[in-house]
Image (cartoon, rainbow over all chains, first blue to last red; front, side):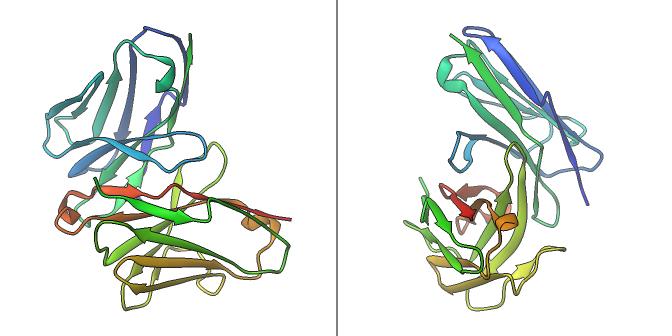
Amino acid sequence: GQQLNQSPQSMFIQEGEDVSMNCTSSSIFNTWLWYKQDPGEGPVLLIALYKAGELTSNGRLTAQFGITRKDSFLNISASIPSDVGIYFCAGRNAGNMLTFGGGTRLMVKP
Amino acid sequence: GAVVSQHPSWVICKSGTSVKIECRSLDFQATTMFWYRQFPKQSLMLMATSNEGSKATYEQGVEKDKFLINHASLTLSTLTVTSAHPEDSSFYICSARVPGLASTGELFFGEGSRLTVL
C-alpha cells in the first residue's frame, strides 16, 4: 500500500525556535492534512491542503502542498511549550482513503 | 466544529472478557465511521470502516470476529473487542467524516479509548 515517510521522527527544541517537518510519498495525493495529537487524546486537525502548490496558514502554523503532489511540509514559528505533542501528516488518494505518516514528536524546552 | 466523542476513555479488563467502545458523532450524522488502533509511539493504523446499516469493511489482517463493529444509527458506532487478551491492549480511536466534507477527506477524531487487558 501507499506509505508516507515523515521526518524528523522527533525534535527537541528551545522555546521560541521555528520548527519544520515534512512528509514525502512515492505516490500522488489529492489532499494533505496535518494533525496534532496530545498524549492520551485523539488527533486534532490543524491544516488541510487541497491543491498542489497551496500554502495555508493557521496562526503560527504554515503548511504547503508540494507541487509534485507527493510531499508536504508543516512549519511552526516561534514555538511555545503547548506546541508539544505528536504531529501527523495524512494524505488522501483518489480512492478517498487516508494514509498517515509515522508522526513527528515535538518536545519544547522552556 | 464537528465533534466526535468516545466512551469510555480508558478501560481495564481481565483476559477473556469482552469490551465495548462507543463512538458518537455529537452534532452531525455520520454514515461512515473509522476505527483506528495506535500502539505506543506509533502512527494510527486503520482497522475497519464502519458503515451505517451494513457490514463493516475490515482492513487486511484485522480479525472481524475479534473486533465486532456495529453501526446501528447515524450517530453511533461501537467496537467490541471479544475475548480480549493482553496483546489487544492498545489505544483505539474512532473518526468520522462530516457529510458534505467527505470529498475533502477531512476526518474528525474522537478522544480515544485506552484498553488495558490484564
